[in-house]
Image (cartoon, rainbow, N blue to C red):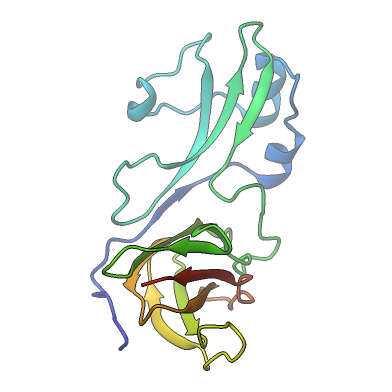
Length: 203
């Protein structure tokens, strides 16, 4: 069965730095060096509002998609240690950036590969990093299953093709092995399918 979400889903909001300037920021840099590359940090009401000189994190953008429990789940952040030096950079795309606007290949987060589940009903949660590229982006999800020995796989079925956010929940067919994968599409083109994540339900 194919599920299609309403087309009235709110449009995503994407604010991001220049990728080359973002890439130039390295662990060990000072606050002044970061600002020289990226400019002053952004005001962000979810991180205390107006930025201050000694904030632990400087915000340089965000991706806000529909149905995310917290509006700043996906952010561009530069973190500073007690000495005021960069110790981390965080971005929504896990460091994978599009060079021409086409979507990057999705990278799955959950389920962990080769997970074994014994709960019933057989609900499975899928989550992946958002893709970089021109927005809006939609995601397609395919799911497959095999015989109990994992030797004969049925053809994959695309169970969703217009998903506007990077997570999905579905009910799996039986007590047997399964596999899932995701690809992304935008106005320019589409990504390759992600690697499979394999799992098994035991009842």
